[in-house]
Image 1 (cartoon, one colour):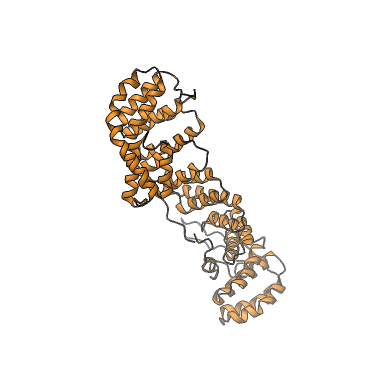
Image 2 (tube, rainbow, N blue to C red):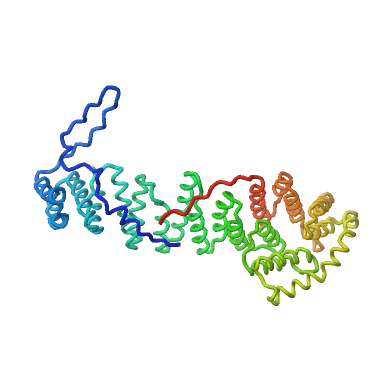
Amino acid sequence: MKLVSKFALALSLVAVSAAPSAFAQSDEKPKKEKKGKEAAPAAPKRNYSKPFIAAYMPVANMLNKTKDAVAAKAAFSTVVAAIGNDDDRYEAGILAINIGAPLKDLAFQEQGIDLLIGSATTPVDLKKEYTFRKGAIAYDGKRFADAEKYMIDAYNIGYRANNIEFLISNAMSQQNKDTDAIAWIGKAIESSKAAGAVSKAYVVRAANLSAKMKNYAAASNFYKELVMTANNPDYWHDALAFFDRSRDFNPEESLDIMRLMRATNGLRFQQEYAAYLDSLSYIGVRYPAEAVSVLDEGFDKGVISRNNVTFNERYNEAKARLAEDTRTLPGTIAPAKASPKPMLSSLTADSFFSHKDYKTAKDLYESALIKGAVLDKDGGDQTDRTRFRLAMSKAMLGDYTGAKADFAMINNPNRKAIAEYWNMYIDQLSKPAAAPVAAAPAT
């Protein structure tokens, strides 16, 4: 992403046509309006010093009457030397900006900006605008500390245009102040939300800054902003990839993250297919149907190759076991339901889930939970794991209300965090219309 954009030139090299001409308004009274119309507000009365008027008028005439900006620039030092008060300083600043405009002289205009923002009598709106422009000139000149200072000053007095929060964040990032940069990009995201649409550029930037600091949980949380706006596979991939790196997940938990990535069409890279197979654990023994299905998808998409020795061997192993697994699976239902051990029902349900027989899986998970706490052979409590996969089965069957009710009962911290993403997926499936995502801001 290009962080430094040449926009200050366009903002700054313009004459201040809206600014008052010097002295014209000193004693002018507001004009009366026709009956029924409000009178225009009176321009502020300014008190210029006599020495300043004497120095200012010849230089202003060079610019406005003879159109000789070069001569006006050369003589401008006499105007500065004659400044006696804040009104003089304000008008001198306006003049310098207007002299610099036809000359395309940013440095000279910056002198004028300094005078203008240094005057106590500069109108607030103008001071906001030119404090920002001072920061913009510094930004384009890669003087990022100055850019940060003046843009924050502008923000603090109410300036909100030109993606200012985003620019402040970038200026901070260029100084390796990433924690502060993330805070300001967060302000940019909130600003874009208030305007009606989350900006993808802001979210991606925030996530990348967080990842740079190895704060993968924050990176994933930023991507939630995009996932909630649109059921986009790329958003899902990035959100879940960062999320998977944010905690220490066991293989069973990682499997259910990879299953969601697959369900959202988010699998993108060879290493993710390898991670999926590793999460299946004991490939070909427990879940040959799912292994074959996942690998077929990867081969068809061209993300993984049959010429890869590892993928090819694992595919052949799973394929060899699939026929026997398919043949014997129906006979496992009755013994699992009849067994007093809940874990047998849960493990049998896992096999049906891997075959995409979500109805039978749901029935078996429910059978396990009815029997009481689901304990594995080592006495570990697998109740949350079982209930989580019951919720997944319901989601796959379209029972979104039931799935959410089960996800809400999860207590394990890791699974509770994974459930949040599954709930977001359910929300996407339940809402056919998606909110618009803003285009990247001009930089």
